[in-house]
Amino acid sequence: MEIETIRQQFFPVELPAGVIGRAVDFDTVIKVGEATQIFDPAALGHFQIPPARQEQVHRLERLCTQSGSESVAFYHGDQNPVGWFWGYMEYATTFTIDTFGLVADYRHQGIYQAFMKTLLPYLTAVGYERVTVITHPNNRSMLISNLKAGFNIVGMEISESRGAAVKLACLLHEDRRADFVQAFRLTREE
Image (tube, rainbow, N blue to C red; front, side, top):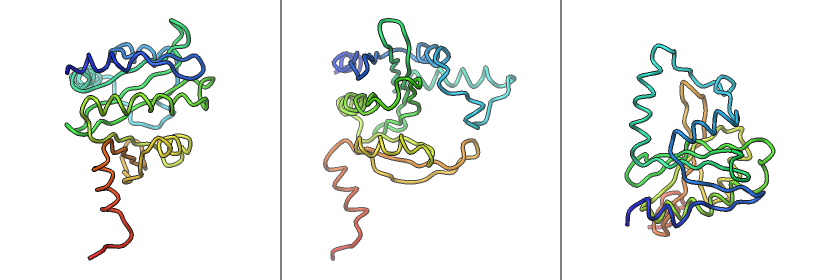
């Protein structure tokens, strides 16, 4: 089954607080991000590509978004953007959540949890085995939300552009979850 056909079975999705999540193209997510001003790149402390190299990076970004990326814009009403989601295929079996953002008035209303209840089955139907997300160790609300959604802490990363980050993975199939438990159990039976 084609991915677009599968996508149409899951999106649009109705979420709490009158929010609708619609599958959109990457350019729409960028526009929603600019319109909502949820994240200030300078305030996040991430490395900012100098203007002289931005065109090259944007060209590569467009290539990256053509293969295995998913973009969802969140709206209240028909045209009022309140947030967005973007993720991509890291490997053939792994989907990585890159960004999820909501304007302040829509946070802490269960929207992320409700969205995960659609996104994870959708990614399973597409064929992924696992979903990963990286977040800052002090972003407690996202850590807790991901743990509640079925993610496990699987590692920590240190990056020159964002510092320390916690990596979480949600294993989408029971045999993958059993293998995780086997690999990380406290005692080894012989």
